[in-house]
Length: 229
Ligand SMILES: [Fe+2]
Image 1 (tube, rainbow, N blue to C red):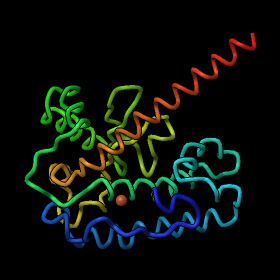
Image 2 (cartoon, rainbow, N blue to C red; image 1 turned 180 degrees about the horizontal axis):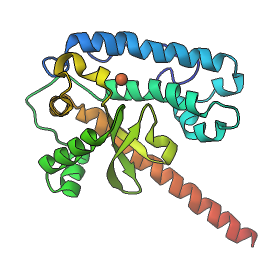
Image 3 (cartoon, rainbow, N blue to C red; image 1 turned 60 degrees about the vertical axis):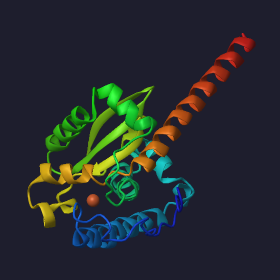
Image 4 (spheres, helix red, strand yellow; image 1 turned 135 degrees about the horizontal axis):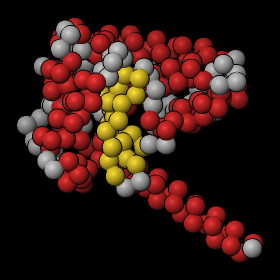
């Protein structure tokens, strides 16, 4: 990911602010991407300013070690703001202008085979999205060879729990209230129309490779240990 260490800036979107219409409206994008994400970025920069040892860590690394920062009082601020920057970038990059093409590719095939068909997958994803009380996200993640749909509260992120994110849906009210009012279910239905399957497939393949690397490292460690014995 570009600009993945301190100091953070708001990277350009891969599409215009009005490109997701009519599913995600321009005004929401102006405020969400143009005002709310920069606020997370500014707060994260201000937080890391006094902690040079954290400045060289990537967003993923900050999120992964956030629980270890409990003693320094940094666990929650890092979860909120490193998470807030990562999650928003991931959500925005996970969308693309709507097309009439049906989703396809290796990830989509895996979704269909694991959930029976795409409609069943959407039902489960929507159900999980409706269950989030207050603010949070719904994620499709990769976990040891299988896909999982999980939710996180606030700006928490699945990386902290060892999962590899494939795509994310922001279900904070600020993501949909201007267009969909309080009707989160309608927003989720609309968001299905703008999922960037190409990007999600890239994320999925990276997750698979990451998992392979971890397994290889584990195997090498075991080999080394058995040689020492
Ligand atoms: Fe958001």
